[in-house]
Amino acid sequence: MSEDRVEMKRPKIEFPCDYPVKVMGDAHPAFADEVLEIMRRHDPTLAPEKVKERSSRHGNYRSVTVLFWATGEGQLKRVFEDLKTCESVRMVL
Image (tube, rainbow, N blue to C red; front, top):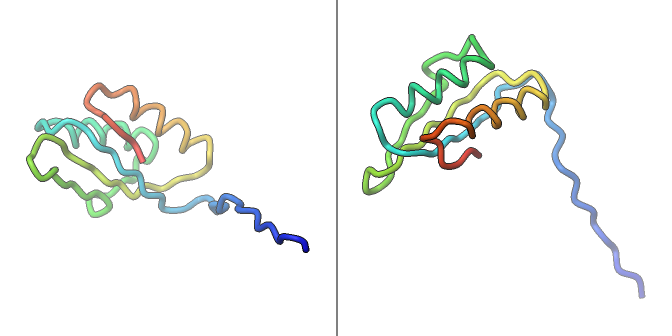
């Protein structure tokens, strides 16, 4: 009896496309501005309606979700690297 193996492949992203990035960090007044400054370096056309902010239940943390125009995997890698250099950022998804 043979077992059928299903191989999982990473979904291929077709660039260019709108790509969501969620950034979580410390809740301070400048957090969203710091995140957006970094994101605009990679997508100068970033529009305010493509940004969502949310506070944690106790208000200690903030999340900023940005739908930005991604042009390729190299750009995505640079975005994630730049966001991780920001002191206020705790996690990037």
